[in-house]
Length: 310
Image 1 (cartoon, rainbow, N blue to C red):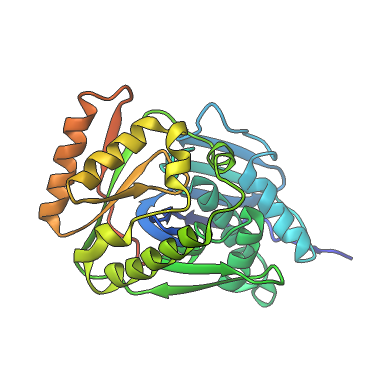
Image 2: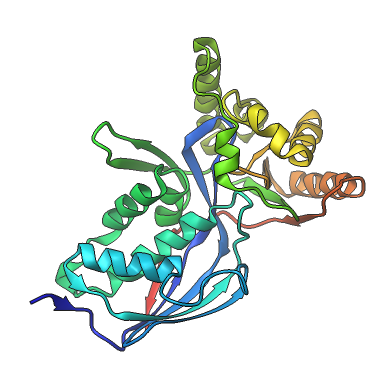
């Protein structure tokens, strides 16, 4: 007889936003940002969904909602008969902006589902990471959403995933410029070539290595460390205003990159003075842009997804 998920359980799950790639770290680097969705979950006889914030009026409000669907799939894979889920979602992470909204949703789903299993049946953080990365197809956003901080992740030949967390320099700050228009990850990935020259790969490898040093030890080399050769130029045509803002900031010596697949722009800086400079330049750029921009200065999230059992 299939085991049952206990009804009447209640928890709150808060996944962070994430920024992947960080320039040259294509499909391997990700940074957690203290900019979180808040999801209240109860197990019940039947499912229901309430949404405010991002996706309200657009996302499903029944069992086809991604979080409920994937929670039930996680339970089935663990050998449990799925319960209904009452979900109240306070969505703060912008959708289709390159800030890891889908990774946050899937990590939240699996973290909640795992926490609601009986104690001896839980897979823990590593199981959540593997399941979420498998669903996403690559671990760059998933890893910081699960573990927090800066993650270096990879995919093994057997299809499993690994991730290590790297300490961040105490002066490191992040500034986001979030445009009013979105861009799907599928469209952004479709702009990439199937192959690149060996010299381009070698140059990108050098940038990525320098970037790790910059993020952990010496932010003064962030500009050189964020030089990308693999994806940003190819994607520029699909987000021309983002590309123009990045060029403007980099010409001023500021380490601006595409956040994930875009179109949000992430600028990595050292200290509050540089934060102020970035904000001023975003404001100046916005006055002449064809899209509107919203600037945010989230702290860097030391922790990944949190689960509070009530």
